Image (cartoon, rainbow, N blue to C red; front, side, top):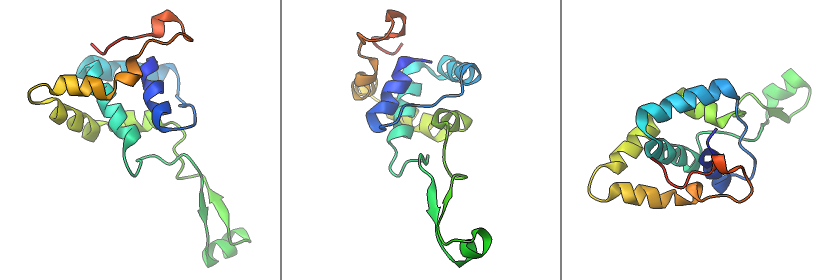
Length: 138
């Protein structure tokens, strides 16, 4: 997995990004090969930074009489709405975020603006193996 994916995630979220491993890596790399690294990085940043976010990291507390009858108490934690693997959710249907990135990329100097807006994700790191460092999207 590319380091910038995690950097973009951590820029917005306090928790580490949980991924599904090699199967997810293959889907992600196929998307990068098809769309280009800059477009995918910008789309991922749009997904992660969306307000409200399209993912739910915490369980939802449910309340009400129906829950009292069903569970024996008024409050219960619903984990069914929780997004355990946000990158998988993004890869499931990234189309709207890819379209946003492509539309933003159109026009004069837009590619440079895109690069600057996500530059933090591509800065070299001193704490990870040098092979993980990517100085700029291709």
